[in-house]
Amino acid sequence: MVRRLLPTALARALATGAACLMAACSSTQPARFHSLAALPAAAPAASSPAAATPWVVDLGPVTVPAGVDQPQWVVRLPDGSLRVLEQERWVAPLRDELRGALLEALRQRTGAIDARTVPAPATSPVRVRLDVQRFETLAGQGAWLEAGWSMAPAGFACRVTLRESAGTGDALALADAHRRAVMALAERIGQSARDGRCPA
Image (tube, rainbow, N blue to C red):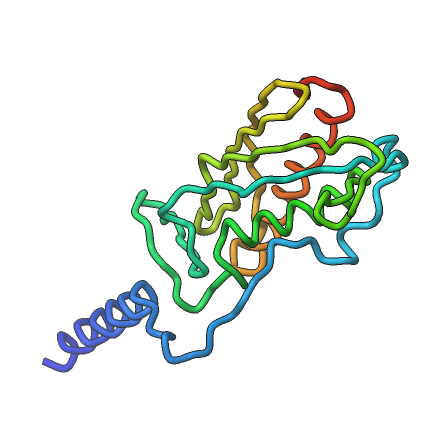
């Protein structure tokens, strides 16, 4: 009888532990906040020609999918389902956090100046409108970003799909993957502003 009960008890304990993890049993722990802005040590000033020639950008409100526009992380699990992680949060609603991080990345990578900080810019600002169609956190994998942007007065529009791996796949690695995706997006927007066309 004992020999039969031990495996059963062990199986139940393992099942309970797995269910606890999947149900976020650590909900009593304090929330951990993440930012999309690049860490200073990870984002040195760019040395590209674009960075040497400042330009003024008027970045409009950023649109993101409604399902992820919240501080809590929305994570896609390997089976395709979605889960909201209450303990892992962006420091602000996603569209606000993304816009601020993108402005900072444009400054660091392309020499851009926020039009709202310049009372009377010497040159007309480049108006950029960004529409994010996909902003996904893939559990154990990385970040997936699909976005389109338009440039005015140049009058053209571009699209890009970015995938960044997360290494260990934990929350800190996933947040870093998103930061790298934002940096890559900023570089492409800066390139399109400099060249007057979409990046190849």
